[in-house]
Each structure stands twice: as structure tokens, then as C-alpha cells.
Length: 225
Image (cartoon, rainbow, N blue to C red; front, side, top):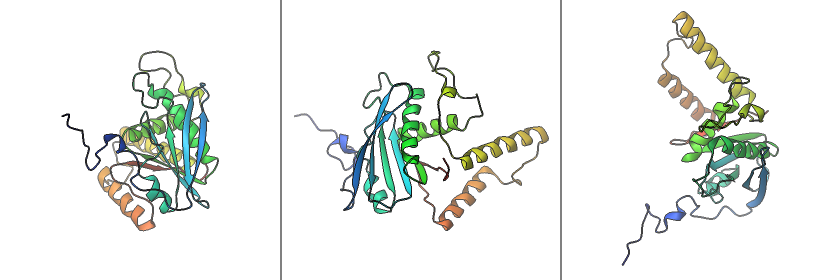
């Protein structure tokens, strides 16, 4: 008799990324077709109860996040949730991460068209995906990747990758601070270590009621993305 694989409390290992309870009463699901400028198609599922001003985006390079386990709790907490599946659902063989950024961009644009605030929540491979996205969206003009890892041409400078003006300004300040530190040998942050600044930022977030997520990448977009 073949012994069945088990992951944690799930008898069926395929259920690890799916919700274990239904979303709250009144939740609506709007399916979205997300077409990209390079003629690709991703798909989204937008969950909401109406009246939300913030939406949380969940995405993975190739896993099925359409019924992600965070959806019920986030909707219950007053957020809309957009779950995005890339064009390479369940397919690692042909997945190209630089092109998946365009799928993420299409999802973010759809979210931004509907809500005042867009939050990227990176779970598992979604953490590296959204970090990669922001590294390119916030890159200086003309400094995005111009080719794939294989050397084939794929110029990300030719596409719109949205990011908040607030986050863009923060990134520019960091570059400026780093440049001043290299040139002058001083610390533009008043001598505080990176860990102490992160700790202070975390305390400030808790005090102001903003969401702080451990073991995930949660990056808030400003109101004018």
C-alpha cells in the first residue's frame, strides 16, 4: 500500500495554498482577464464586499493563488483582495521571470483603477516576484533590465511598471544617502544602524495601526500610483 504524502495538517498536499474556510458572507468575486503589452494573458480574481478603499494583491510566478488562504481573513478585516495567476500557471518549464513582471504590472494596474491604495503581499515565491517587480519599477530612468538571463533581448524600459511616487521618492533618498556616505564617509542617518531603523519603523507601524506582516513581503503603494 502506497503511503500518502502529507504536508502539515493537510492530507491533500495540493490544498496548502487554498483557504480552509469560506470568505465572509456577502463576498463577491470578479474574474479579471489581464492582458499584457507583450501579448500575454494573466488572470485575476477580485474578492470584495464593497466599500473598501484598499486592495491587497497576492501573486506567485506559477502557483495557483486564486483561492489563497489569506483571502477570508483579509476580506473580513475590510480589505479587497486581488489574487493573480500568471500566464505560466503550474508551468516551471517555460516560465520567464522578466515577462512575469508584466503580468504583475497588469494586475497592479487593474487594482489601482479600482482602489485608492494597493498593497503587494508577497507569499512564498510571490515575495521575490514583487521585490523583483519593485526593483525594476523604481529603477532610475533607462536603468531597467534590457535582456533575459539567457541574453535574449527583452527591454523592461519599454513597459509601464507602476510604483507610488512616495516609494519612488524614498528610493531616491536612499540612493542619495548612500552616495553621500560613500563620498564623505559619514552616516546620513545620524549613526543609527539599519536594524535599529527597521525596529523603529516597525514600532511606528504598530502605533499607527498599519499592517505589519512577518515572514512575508508587504509593501504599501501610495494613493497616487
